[in-house]
Image (tube, rainbow, N blue to C red; front, top):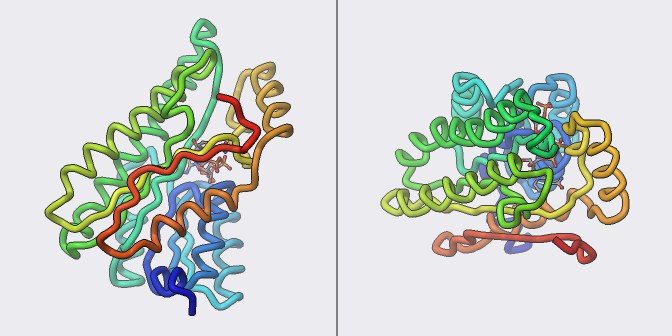
Length: 251
Ligand SMILES: NC(=O)c1ccc[n+]([C@@H]2O[C@H](COP(=O)([O-])OP(=O)(O)OC[C@H]3O[C@@H](n4cnc5c(N)ncnc54)[C@H](OP(=O)(O)O)[C@@H]3O)[C@@H](O)[C@H]2O)c1
């Protein structure tokens, strides 16, 4: 067994937003590497099929319908993981949306949803998993930010604000959890080929982003490999930030 595989085998990993894109790719690779994966998202049927497929292939997967904007549902996701597998080693706070638009269009419902999913959803993940990790005196909290957590540009101010917020929360979390032996990783991808552009509600912006993604986006496995890299380090090594982009991406 490779060293990497031995560090992942048997770990209980909860993934929010596991029904597509980065979350799904991470779930698939972690399952192959021997992790027990607990999948959360709203699209129950897709989650169920994914879990069934992984279980058929010899993995251990559990699908729990979860809307991360409801804190009791996120608590239930983590509690079910602990009931089923006895502990929670890793949570990947990954669920997110990106309804980009210039501020002057006043897409205020989109602003609210983006904040609810991308910031409050992440906080609910922290609230649900931290008590277990404190008690275990071990754990790994993985936060999914973005290049937009480092860079700001026209038509993604709100999305960038939420992804900057994720990095701020993660860094505060990192400093606070020293007594509990908990690791903290922020992963900030550039353009990756997922369903994320479908969350853009303004048709012209959506068209522009789809065109851009079709030209440069890289496969979702790039994210899965970053997760595996962070998780496979020796216990005393904490990979705090990973920022990656398509080689062709400028911003
Ligand atoms: N793709 C990129 O280029 C890129 C770049 C940087 C950062 N990211 C970040 O990566 C993360 C994953 O996005 P993706 O690219 O994989 O896009 P995606 O394919 O659209 O996946 C988003 C996931 O989030 C879930 N989700 C959305 N709202 C939710 C809610 N209220 N409750 C629970 N789950 C919810 C979706 O599942 P349901 O609809 O089934 O609930 C889906 O599984 C996001 O945080 C995104 O901001 C992506």
